[in-house]
Length: 147
Image (tube, rainbow, N blue to C red; front, side, top):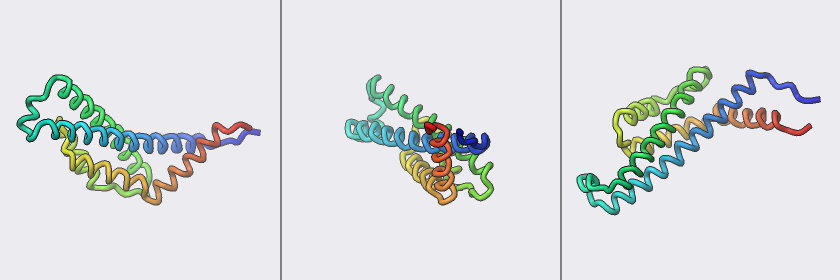
């Protein structure tokens, strides 16, 4: 007999696991962004010289900024949904402030991006969220177990 799993629990479990994956994606794109910036800084001694970037460098920077910003926006929407949906979870004002700063400029401030990633990870490992993610993983695994 297959296990009957509450559809609400299944949906919540899937949502939390997606949020976890989104946070991992933000971290990955942030690391790539840092690498691109460091490479450009090693080639161009100051920001004014970065205006002399060739087309490939400009495209690379533009692409990683767009990927990073997109992943930040997606993770932020999920973060806000969790804060609203889970009464025991408290909103982190730093995450909100950093998110608003990131949205304002095309080139994302490195320190602000780092702080956002760090705070998002702190949010993810809070005891409440950590327990929910572990429980969600169990629920999703149970859905796909062979009988």
